[in-house]
Length: 346
Image (cartoon, rainbow, N blue to C red):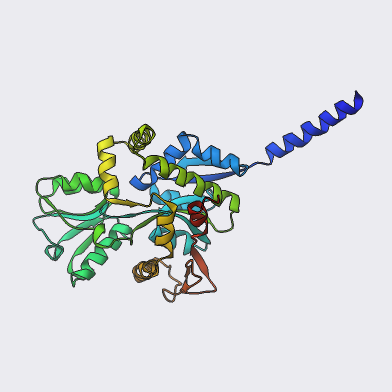
């Protein structure tokens, strides 16, 4: 009897220590069409399921201020965070945080755009004031639009404007021009006097939305996040009741109607399968895109005062090639986990 009690005591001690040793990883996200699926993954129990599979806890936190979410990731509060390719480079990577683009979720295919009154082309922006969030992807979009039309920022005046104020300023100004993203873009474009003169569908694959994780984090976290994401993608891209329920929850989380959310999905090039995302990530165009992004970022001082050139920070790609400093790689595009999902090996 004493031997039995001793064995039970040892088992209890061992089991308790095993449970308490289960590591928790904090992940953050912010509202955007292509990131709402994370809320569904959490509320549906998919995140927990994949965390349990790898014996970890996944704690998802909504941070309503997008840039603040990236700052919190950079300062160490979160192990992973959603962000664009440009912001991944200019905030954590430039800040010295070695980060990996784990999941390429989508690219903006009309979700970002330039709208104006009293004009119907990019060339009509000449001499105008343009409201946008300075040094954001909106600024990048404007730069690319001007470049493609033989213009530069010297031809107009950029007015740094909070995304919370762009809508009201545009709607109240008869001569307004603005660069913004959905759902604000849909609101401004619906104004009877407004014209959409350029959008991200003109530069497909350049504004990329990703789940970024600190490179040093364990495989268990990377596999669990990837598995949860693609299970969610499978559900939301279906044609059944489960898909409708998933979309309804995402629309509610985003603060809009199902019709509004579905309209935004139409201008979001979602990679619903891991195979599609892997193909995009291993494609040659990604390197060209990141060269555009790093050039824009460096030219506008986003590499910091001490930066000597756009090559200061290294960007690594799945084929092993590196843009910039090979001895200072801080942003890595890694297709291995998406490939595992595509192969059913997670």
